[in-house]
Length: 503
Image 1 (cartoon, rainbow, N blue to C red):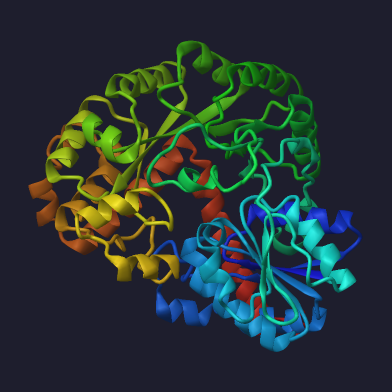
Image 2: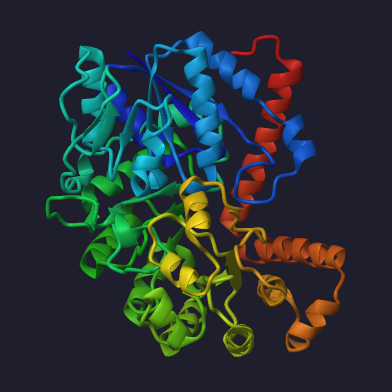
């Protein structure tokens, strides 16, 4: 069969895996790409530019030309409304094609997603086992027997629900299709390449999908799993040679979680790969031995979450029992071993107070990360923090339904936050620019001072801050995003206005 993976916005890492699974089963694959430039769901849409760089017609022409038997979507909450719009159009163009939806949003609210007439199959939880079985059933024309981790519609419209089996334990069995990724996008891999060698997280943060995702299977299974060191190193050696990547980012929820695995991996990595890398750590697990191992293996950047500086709030409402003492220890160790620190901080958490933000500002003055990454609070279906927002009357049943439908304002980098107040905007600005300011100015940037700075001046300061910190700390993510976005702009312009052959 012919399988089309319909990609919205940035390249979904799931497609790199599932296209390889489809190829392994003998199917023909193609990636259909809708760039969604200036309307990606993460920042505020710029309507004039989004219209200019809209390449939907070209994507649909390519889809019609390929004429697939199956069309696959991977869906986040911020993309859900875009995805169902694209899916409905796909069904009109290819009425005989079966449409499959997977992803975190689908797993959270399967009943919402399957209610769309044009969606035939949804995968819930991990799709590694379900996906090849779905393709097999479609090829056989078997529309009556349940499929594990799957809901689908039979020929008479009945929804058939399969058993939710345990998580895949053998991560070495997951294939990667880097060929399609390179062929379609020619991304600036030399700057940055993301990989992930573990699944699951032991923590239970109230705002994170792990809160409900770990409990999806009906069967007991290990939620936290690792690719073997040998397999991980072989993959990285292939990426290094074939993709010529110069920087790696390990997207594992907590890269340092399993110290035994980490030690074995880093020894092999230093010997056989030796590419500078960025990773995610946790302040409750970070110690000097880990810092030394990371540094010696080539770690240049480390990212960790603070989210709220108030320990009582963090423990009670975020399910994060860590201490500020360990945050300070982590920052000191990262500075000692010259590893750039990225501290994540959530703006607009329900019930987080002006006093808590001022506490955070004072904390950062004495314990400054190299880069502070403020993110706006985005509510995701079935996360525990929704209950807190209901208690505070930020959310009600109507708004929760809109969240489930992906219709609420949703932006990690723009002030779409439900319940946002003026002090949220001011402290977002303060935290964003604080590390870039000279030391004598940092203390002067208070809440009241921020209120007096005109908006357009703030925009200029934020742009300066991003550029300055990117250059100073060689920030691979910003460099990659800038290069990739620029390439996408020129690719779309060429496709729309300068290319005779549209597909």
